[in-house]
Length: 345
Image 1 (cartoon, rainbow, N blue to C red):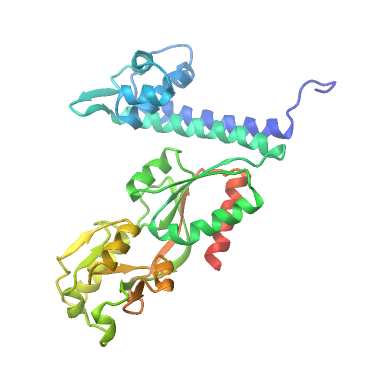
Image 2: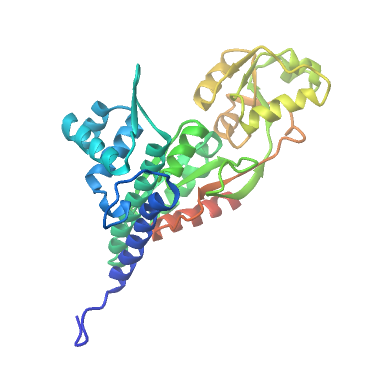
């Protein structure tokens, strides 16, 4: 407060900036969604309430009113009422009942996405206010693909917490598609792992940290370890543990054999879990195409062994994926710096 009136503090300026970013997400409802909205003195996004939007997000994510109500800690009729009010404002149905629950329309999914991103901006606004007062306890939600889980991510988190011990860190794992959905909807801040080509969305930025090639990994007493380096024909006769279709590592696995005129192995177990892959390798003569970084702990301990040098043509970029308009808090920015440091080591 001054003689000329009120002016915002540094914390206030940051919160105003975050609020404006949140409102811009909600303006996108009017800009990009074709809705037969109820006409009124205000744009549609100004007619919506936080209760309606939170109910929408919960129903879309949980695919049902009962689970949504449980998540929000309110009664199921309250969620129904908020959803119906929202449908009335939008001028169209937002949900369809199915045999397995409730299915959100494309319009509802888009509306929920903008609402989730707006709520994320407001949460970050409060966190930045705390940061200006020295309370470095911002939330960091990271989606991790298999390669990053064993070394890169633990090192970066450990170093972050040495300097920011109050930071709240959440690590989410899952399939690439699941983590991508969470990223686009603001439930995680960034995704770490193998980058995709082409990028899955124009709304994302992919930032490479390093290139990583794949080697053939087997148990320490595998019979082929005591013979000459196997050729592609011998490898094709092995049983394999492979990632699921559509992943970069699976594409490299198939390409390796196809380029040598050999039918890719058919005796495969699809598995995206390193823990399960490790168990399958140790209890059989199967092989897996893995990054040495990914299996480093078991290789160093002698539980697993590298059968071949990195296969030619299997290098893929490992890095960060984040939303193009993502503006990290100080804690989140510090974590990105630690990831760059860990990748260089």
